[in-house]
Length: 429
Image 1: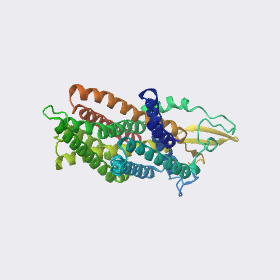
Image 2 (image 1 turned 90 degrees about the horizontal axis):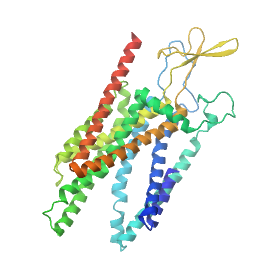
Image 3 (image 1 turned 180 degrees about the vertical axis):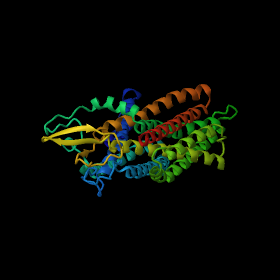
Image 4 (image 1 turned 30 degrees about the vertical axis):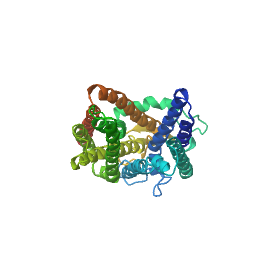
């Protein structure tokens, strides 16, 4: 549905006859479709892992010997899958830069007027969105999960006709989990930083380059035209380099979470790259391409993709993460549930009391929505606050703001890792 809405918005943008309300409504329609698509990416990741061939139709097994212990299910697969999502995010960015962006110029070279060339470009992108929507419908249609399949949901109490609770009722629960569960809160915060980084690279880098080349009052009219074209070329090259490095590092970030259970060292490296990269870029001379400048924008791409991959990995892993196991004993034919909070408790204890395992999978849609809301909030904050600082303090100000965002995420990674290690030591004691 998201890509279908995007396609409709592309066609509506071309047909808009005025700014208000037609163009505004078309732009809002595009925002709705984009939000829908990004939310569903987060929501379907856990389903893709849980329906993998080796585990399809299976829940974490409780038929185990007395020495087995509870583990987080599919954790490595979530990281790998998030890495592939990041990889294709980079491919999509390069596709936009290399294929869609030059379309108007190519159409003008074959004799089409600039106005019609731009309109035809929107139509081409809209048709592409329709093709993607059809592919998603065909590819994901068989993997949908109905309410009747959610036997793990706490709202289901044995009655097949019980009405599903409203998704809105889950929002307070998810917000509370984001505060009380470090991994989920870190995923939301990483989503905020990832989306703000995307805006910083796509919006403020071109503005920064334009400010250094086009806004010199000493330039005449012809000089401005020449320098503005040069600024466009440099900005495109810098954005392309950052996305290439994002593309290369996406699978790398998807692999390394497996090696760091408590301290998310790869995410810390990504945020540190962003903190250093944005401060360095704010102090760079962008009037000419230099090796140092390319290294700096490479750091920005690495920071962006690291936040994207790890935010998806953290959130999707939390969705399928086992809650504290519930011990179910059979007494006089009745089930009696008691909570057991020990991670190393056997799945079947010596008294033949089996343990049932629950996940947060019934909250995956709401978690995906809050995840996307965090990203959208980042866009709003950076565009408004960053734009204000750009006008009042100078073109380098938004990059200092982005550096602060990355430092905040780095601090959160350190705090969450410290808390996890402390809890682990407390259990051992």
